[in-house]
Image 1 (cartoon, rainbow, N blue to C red):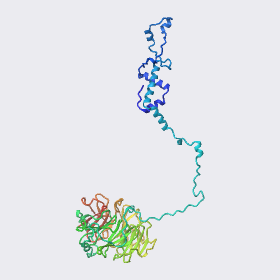
Image 2: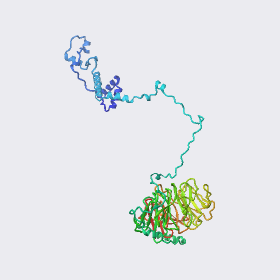
Image 3: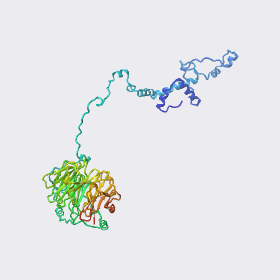
Length: 549
């Protein structure tokens, strides 16, 4: 008999165990030479043997007894079964013994018990067999659902909650907004109680002579760009987190830079300075990204900074305070000066509104508020000569408005710049005449428009293909004019090796600033010095790079 290898085979064997199957199994085993040896029975199971006549005695009719040894020889192939089985052959006795041994083996491994337990587990539950008549009778009858229309009822009127303002993701975990009113100008990276270095006030109070714009041909301009380099001393960590905005102070004796980061910090860095941390002073006037900043042209000791937390403050180095200029709940995005004395501002927010703010008016509110775009505004910029005009980068169109004709809603644009297919990051008038508008769009194009006549639709002059896909963790690229020239601009780049590129309005590349040792990151925020040959670039780790001659 073949050996049972697993309990599973034993279960199958027990289920199929019938006398017919067992007999066939034993016969097959006998033919294959697997039949067990003849069994030896003990005397108590034996029964008296009946003498059987041999074939030869029957033929001869002999009645004489044969010798005992001959009788045993004749009956050697016949054995008597145990009591109750009658007369069986040796083969049948072996078969019965095999059955008994198999059952004993299966009992020793508890297979019969396991089989019953298996049947209990595999037996379907009553709930799976369907409901009986009793259950069906008790089952609750549920009426079919009907809509209000089928029931001929009026629909319920639900009022939606007001749309939240300022729903930026990172705002949920940002610190509380700074209180309104003046804040002391105390650096956070120096010892507590330390005063501002007197050299800072002297540098900011420097008499800045605004010369006429330099008129250089492209060849001379490219030559000056090539002389501008960066080294280890011209790279410094000015703020702690990603830079959102940066600018140069107009002084010429030294290079003084300002930068605003993601969490409302404003840093001042004097190149080669000996105060603070390597010439860096760090302040905390805001709590959210500083989206825009600019030094006052009429009062160089003042730096205005705007934050997403809804505050617009003026850092006055002479008074050593951050004055409160304009304040709303949240969502300020951009601003620009609307007068030569920098007393009047146009301020844009995330909700498609612009506010006219007069700093001479007491308080921190606006003079008027106007809704221009139902979605958002990303940039405002005032015409350099005709201050009543300002350009606005709206959702997918750039519009030029006249501040004298603004209405509370639905103001009519003087001119519009079409052709953008995605959101627009920035729009700037050319710095000398305002005859050009430079736009940066997320459709990977930089465009230059002719705004010399301010027609209803300003014509498109040039389109430059440029990768604008910075991703989530980098500040958006924005092309900015060189304030010393009318027709050249600078923009960061996503290309490798990392670089900063300068283009002419015709689309011709003038120069690429690269340095394998000191420039290895994307400089999203870029700006030229207003009078000197110097260029800054800010990255996502709070560092400023300066290229200068």
